[in-house]
Amino acid sequence: MIKNAKIGVVVLAAGASSRLGYAKQLVEFKGKSLLQHAIDISEVMDFDSKVLVLGARKEEIERKIDLKGFEILINENWEEGMASSIRKGVLRSQELENNLDHIVILLSDQPFVSRESIEALIQVQLDKNSQATFSEYAGDIGVPAIFSAEVFYDLKELKGDQGAKKLIHDQKLDFEIVKFELGNFDVDTAEDVELLKQMEEE
Image (cartoon, rainbow, N blue to C red; front, side):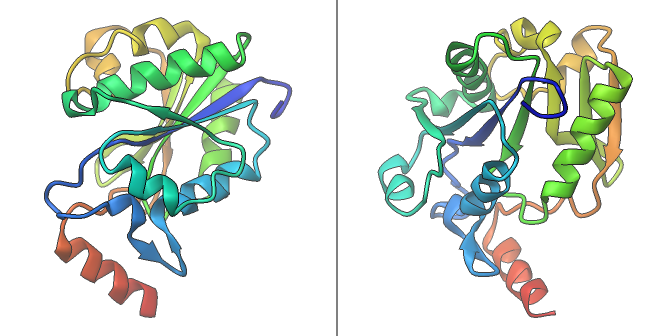
């Protein structure tokens, strides 16, 4: 129970990191992997359900992380794209806690996500009684994001490589945004990893 609401979290970590050539979920920043960073932040926030969606390289990733109460959900259809992981993650979250009011969706490759940035999303979502609240960075919106139970069905209908923000274009979604500086920095290439190392040393 967070702020008198039942809130679950889903961490999406099923991708193959094809451009990088190895598991970006395990790239280290400030002494821990990016995925472990997302797990550790979630672990201290008292979410009512915690689901980690793995797919490609699942055995290697599972060996190298501390789950801290997360349930692992294997997405065998990870090659379909992000939508399949969102569908499965939302469904499993509802199975674990059938009265969830909201679900937070995180990625496993955003090194600068913080407890404060997630708490800001939750606060705006609850204050505005919104269907969704997205992070805004570099002129775009995306995850981390939080969704109310009103749109769980729509999240479970996403297809292909569609992210959750597709809901904005498909229907009249009542949503808010929260600024998240550096939210656009994720790890997809060797150049990203090198830049991350340089930022670590600053």
